[in-house]
Structure formats: structure tokens, C-alpha cells
Length: 96
Image (cartoon, rainbow, N blue to C red):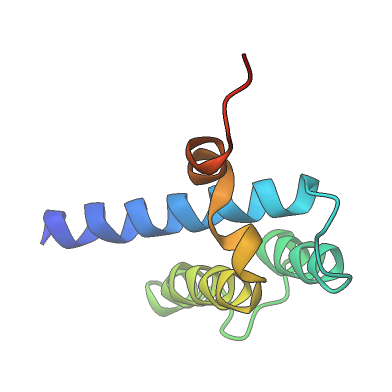
């Protein structure tokens, strides 16, 4: 069970890293900044689809919805931005 959580954490961490790189890249799509801002606003706002007052369900919806939204945004990125900074430095020709 903990292996599944570790794998999910690794995927979310990798997707968040790709999004962070894409946000700073000059060729980012125009929709990316507003989409990330809306996800951050949803995460920080007290208004949820399912209120956090409910003992378990209120928190679980955030733990499911936020990774799904991050994954969807990464899938919608152009192929050049999906590679992330690590793969781009490996593919780039070396100077000198």
C-alpha cells in the first residue's frame, strides 16, 4: 500500500516539476498561467466540491482532484515542454 502512495507521489512530483519548468519557459501556452493559478486558488480556498468538514471525504477529494488536474495540464502541454529541463539538457549539444 505504501508503495502505491510512493509511486503516486513520484508521479505528482514529476508532473509538478514539468509544470514549474513550463511556467518559466518562454514558449509556454497562453492558458498555462491562468490554469495553474486556478488550481492553486482551488487548493487554498475554503470553497471545495466536498467540504473539508466531512471527516475523510472532504480531504480525499483534494488529494484526488489536484493530482488529476496537474496530470491533465501536463498532458495538454506541447511535446517540447513535456520533456522537462533534465531531458532537454541531455538532448542539447554541448558547447566547447
